[in-house]
Length: 112
Length: 113
Image (cartoon, rainbow over all chains, first blue to last red; front, side, top):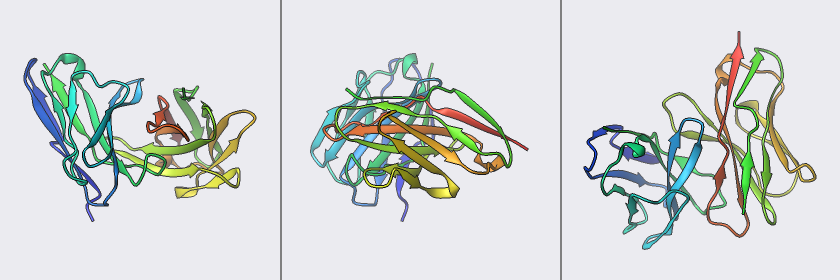
């Protein structure tokens, strides 16, 4: 039972490049979400999904896209990377939005 | 709208002393409240939650939290701190009508030997 996995662990991008952060869970959770963590800002929700085929915006969605084609996977796409997107990104899953969230180990992204 | 505040960026406590990490919240309706801990270079880990029932909630690693509806608080406590408790602690809240939890900015707990 791997829980929530994220790849890559670390990535360096140049401004304007695109990339996809991968997230997968093996707990059959319906609710999945992406957060970014910045110093002094806590965790801010980027996008979330309440089930396969359903996604919605969180607090800071601009510059990011998501899709949920399966229950297990919830990739986050950066369309055109900007230095302001330098952050640590966490994926999380839970049975529902009201229950305990299980977090992945994070992806550290540096945009130059 | 919902919000959560962790008024202290950092809490310092000596090993063996009791510790408190503060959290206050604002929601419409009944709150679902959570505490998570983050160790360096790791993801967040669940500590405890309040949904309904007893106001004193017991969680992992000897931590507990008291739900106080009148003061809209959910402070995290531990009777005797350990150096290994040093970490970043996050309070989170979600209201009954929301799909989006709100996290506090986090409190860095430093336990001195």
